[in-house]
Length: 476
Length: 41
Image (cartoon, rainbow over all chains, first blue to last red; front, top):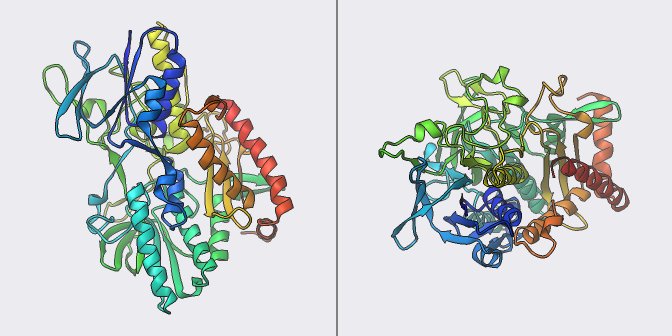
């Protein structure tokens, strides 16, 4: 009998638990335990609508325990603070909500904790101790909606306002979520007849417009090569959105954001409402060896993300598809896997840069949504391989799997629009596709109502699938 | 952006809310997504 612990219940962790349960069903008395500090699953892609006040946070969530009870998976509501990975006695230490701690033994473990939202990295950033909003969690998105609707109320009385949306740090990621938010805000203001009273600005760390942390994308259409830069520039021109890119946020004060860009220019922008995505770091988990030594530096990268089977240490210019992890297995502790945001990438997908004062500015690679799910699935099936005495054989490299993204711009059935984006593969792989690093015959990007339908369909399809309702395995 | 590209972008923008065009695009894009998803599942 094997004990498998999954730490985290987001896209990667929760899906890994479902795959494990399904693959090990009827194959012995194996024990699967999910430990999560949040008792609900949140379909994060829909938080953009929560942040505009068009959806309630509860509509993006479901309780995890009933799903796990139905499937025979153990669930512990708590926060993992330590992992003891040495073979003699492998366990995790969990802080429970009532203040107690609990040790949970494991034979195999998947770390899928998602990100720690590092608001303290920038003075004045974030909704709790700062002056900006976030749509990264349900409470944040709900608060963002409340502040936005307060502003709408003021606009209705005739006031004018400045709104800034984008990234709040030189190394932030998830530009796609911020892009969705600024487009939804624009269209919401248009529908309310208030758009002409608002100056809307995109502020980001991207080296070029439409980079999205994935080094942008190219697509072929009628003999032309379109880039995501062409498309985002076009959309922003249509929407009347100004932009300021290649920028790191140095500090935020009430109503003012201070930036420095790659040319070393220091700028200030006033705002009445700002939503800036924070940088991510790993959830604070210590790795302790059998002698009680802290070996976190050995198992994780400096940001705390768990090292897996990637080629680390290469400069950006030399990094290529084969350097990205395939099996998500830790090279030191073979029974440790990491998936989703929690695995350490070998480097950025977008070109990194530095301001003249040395401030790093360049998106870190996104590993969310579908990519997270695929890495969780590969990790889960590799554990099944090991339990059954085989070498891990399942792969889901970001340089061999597609990126599928629907960026909502307006959420309406008969008047909506969204950018439908497909790239293959996510990480450029020049070893396989020398010209662009991607197979352009499999890349697509277009704006239209069809995307809005897809986005809404995916919301319901994923919430259905991830509750393991009848036929859930048919939804890929 | 070249004139040819801008013209094509203008065309995509004009039909982005045309129900018939979008029904067709939903089928085309849905099949494309399905093809990519099948590569990894």
